[in-house]
Image 1 (tube, rainbow, N blue to C red):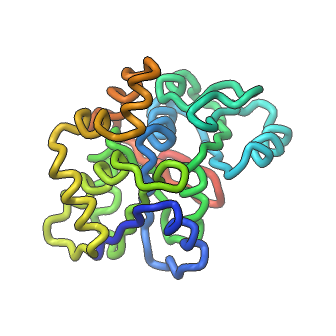
Image 2: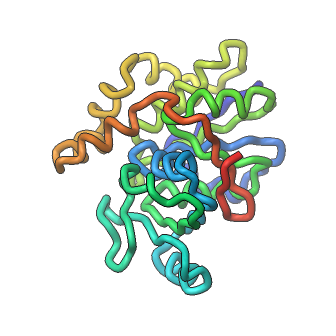
Length: 232
């Protein structure tokens, strides 16, 4: 197995032009988009539609009026949406479709559309992710970042997955995620150290950080095909 990593949104922007045939992309937006998606799927959500913009979300909502409309901008609930981006909000939608748009996570997911497989990554489903990609030959760990910058928490989760393949060939970027993960043996400590985790805790949302820091709470993997995420 060859493991590579994408560490910044600038690099993510190049993915639609890259040849991703034969590549499995695992997208990490730990605080909080992909953690919320995994939580929703683990609690029975039927489908998740990650979209790039608020306008696209509203257009899709018009075609799927029964769907839950969720997401954030600058960390806050979007006006007129049903829910924001806290994973704690995504535990009560069994059998429902969810349309979501976030600053970085949904953009990163859609940038990977040409890959052979696109999986939703988090600490919450680390064991399930490990099993899901164990037979893949090329793995690209996509760290969604924050606005246009690197996000520590995404690298921690990506490195935690990379570390489960001790015989894999790692690029320097993947080795960097592994080194970062090893620097934070406590995932919660790492998430609280990160800029995003610190901001969330300061805003009174430490419980969300604690939720996202749980390792392998859920045995579910979300896979995106044709812009729709379903549990596999």
